[in-house]
Length: 177
Image (cartoon, rainbow, N blue to C red; front, side):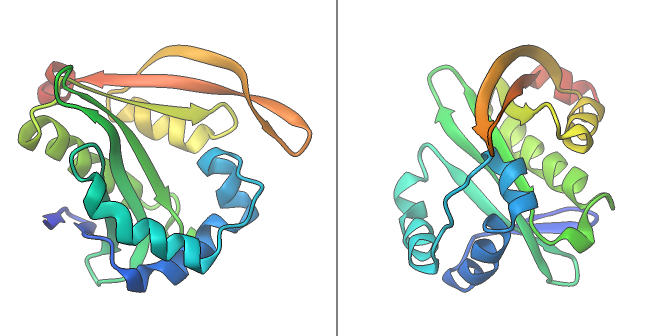
């Protein structure tokens, strides 16, 4: 499945993407934004994760983010897809820092929300974002997400605790936009 936007194309993740993913998730600045991982990910682990994606299709949908010029810059996905309660959690990483703050993440989020609400017929999509990630919070608010709560000091990274802000958007809110 391929989803096309104005700035990005969401496509299936391939084994060839593993090297870039490893580079990105092992970058300290990106690792902090992704969940404060302190353990490095190996190429073997990343390839194994990619190989297992198809087994999780019922409850997870992950896509590579390419620019319209076919440059792979990140990934976006829905996980914990609950078809009974019609909800899922969103995650996105723009791993190539050259593309930060230029609208690529916004376009990818728009595509994945359209997919979630129009194709999967979900009722809600939620996410968690760390309190220090102001750029992401601003994007999510602009896209219509509402703050639903705060997990106080829920992540420990390099000797310090951080809050995770829980946000969500409902189908009716997205379709109004």
